[in-house]
Amino acid sequence: MKLGILLTTSPENENTNTVISISSAAREQGHEVSIFLMYDGVYNIHNKEFAKLADSGVNIAVCALNVEQRKISRVDGILFGSQYDHACIASDVDRFISFG
Amino acid sequence: MVIELDLKGEVCPYTFVKTKLKLEELDSGEELCVTFDHAPAVENVPRSLKNEGHKIMGIEQKGDHLWKVRIRKA
Amino acid sequence: MKKITVIVRNLPLNTRRNAEALRMSVGLTLRDDKVTVIFIDDGVYSAAPSKPELINFAPLDKEFGALSLLKCAMLADRASMQKRKIHSLHENIKPTEREEIVRTITESDIVIPF
Image 1: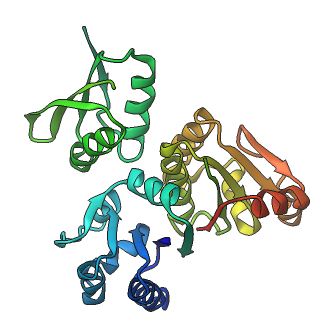
Image 2: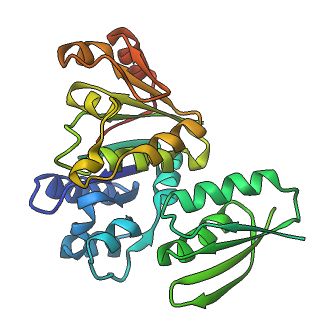
């Protein structure tokens, strides 16, 4: 199954841990996982757990405009994409969960 | 003939929305030249257009924050 | 084609969340899915005419203009409006009974409370 996740809150919010836990559990069960980070969710890109998720095959994209607005440096393995990428995730997945 | 579209001052997703709407007015094979001044758009709009089947004919930097992207409609 | 509903429910002037919800809604149309925006609870303040530029806050004209152009339905929960004594809305936003709001949400493939 393809799972899409939207995260719009910053790392101090419990949403971050929930997204990490759900994503890694879904990957362990062989599901395809795509995460889109926007608004304050882009602050999560420097969380090492997200790098681990990317290494495990989770597709992670961020809204490059929000990253630029917050002057956050880029991270390898994460797509500095656009709302088009979010639209693709929403359009293509079987289930979509929003954490805001 | 190449149709020009000036998207200076526009950010995502309006850069892509306006490019897409303009391309809808064109016939297959016609070319559109879009001007951007928002760096992420220069990376993302061509990638997204390719994903939609259009062909990127060239990306040219015209200044510090100015780019022209030539697109051939699928 | 999926039905995607975005729910705007926060006060508008102490956060960019509502503006970003609308920008995201514009983006979600890019794969030709059907996007509906619902304004509910304090989110209906975003649907009402205002002058946020007076406090150096960007108005939402661009977002509303794009959503109208892209023919996205924009619904404001009438009960939330009445509770806050809101009587007028931005162009192309429809005051909507709670039953229709619920129907829109339950018929959606994806619901994004932003």
